[in-house]
Image (cartoon, rainbow, N blue to C red; front, side, top):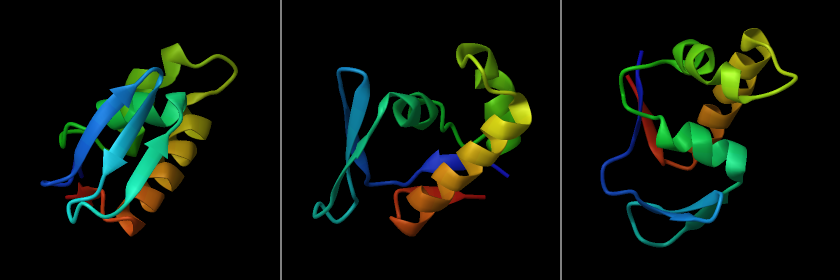
Length: 87
């Protein structure tokens, strides 16, 4: 199951964060530095577990299982906001 940014959604890095404009062009969402790291990795090839496995070395004090749970929750909020698709 891959997670990918939804077609038509645009985004712009802004310092360590990312600003996202939904496909309708009506809602802006700003991601913090951690969310921005995950957002940039949404390639449609990896699920939350694979993303956590690849990203865990960049986060101090968190293990792969904890990061997987955090990524799953984050992806859930992005799905609710219609910003990503999950295959």
